[in-house]
Figure 1 (tube, rainbow, N blue to C red):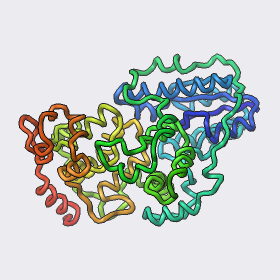
Figure 2 (figure 1 turned 90 degrees about the horizontal axis):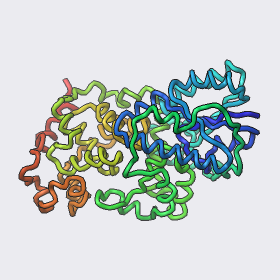
Figure 3 (figure 1 turned 30 degrees about the horizontal axis):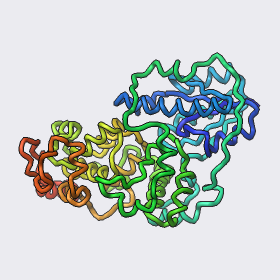
Figure 4 (figure 1 turned 90 degrees about the vertical axis):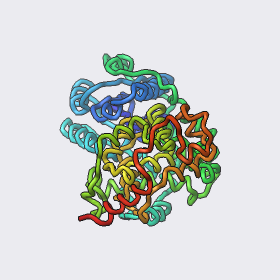
Length: 439
């Protein structure tokens, strides 16, 4: 059987469920990757983001070449590309990993319909999540979901599959990665390389997560979110590695479950893509002042911890998770900027951007999403004092403040620096009027 294998967010050979099935059933496998419009929109930002993706694809192609195969790459509309490939190559099946995001699912449905029209088999496999979103009874609160999620996980869900020993791929007159990548503006990524994921997974001490995850100045988080986004290691590899050091109810495992909770909500409540989960908080009177949005993106809000986090985001394509919470709170609660604008800001720069997770987190931070907490608004000064007590994080990304003492920084005594765009106390009064006294 000749099978086309469509790589998407699973850029590896190890424990790749769809590829393993293709290997079991196919005599010939033709691996393909498509730079479609949705992906290019995500990459429409710093050239180093595209550079990282190309590095991931080069690593994948190298892995395939070691197995006797190669990666064919295309640029454009997947439906048109596959229509041509199916007519030209005459495969008997098309295998891929299941898409669970809004845009990914829309594209996959078109390709599935195309395969049906051509009379060939289309199969997709859950590779990106531990539990299929439809497998768990609908829950709107994380703790209730987490209990069901723990019980739903089976040995089959968490087992790691074998890597194909050899992949037979015909030599075809189709474009490869280097030929297709000439269409894109890219540059090497100084902060992230494709081979980081396996190294980080082996090196990271998951036991340190509980105590170090909120400290901005420490390397306390796993930094595996980028690996999850591109599938450089499987979610099962991460779980199995973590479970050698942790219990299933540990904080790190809960963070994996939070990711799955957002996909659970997307599956059961698909309308939340652009609409607040909580009906009572729809139609809030966001200010969306252009000068505030510009000050935010240019990292000149006058609050050092906010500005440092934005600098990190723009320089590295990544932001510490605690910083994400503080920034999202500041954007939606202090500045009264629509959470959808904040979501687009993260989309513009984040290397680990995931539309489902990002949307869920932004609605949660704006207090308009599922699993609401009592109305929460972080004080950026207190957050800096608590989670960057020695100002190492702030001074790393705001070197212009290096000569100032931590006391000056945390008390906003910043000669020559940007003045705060607004007063925290005044913002606290204003946001409560908007959220709780709507007219």
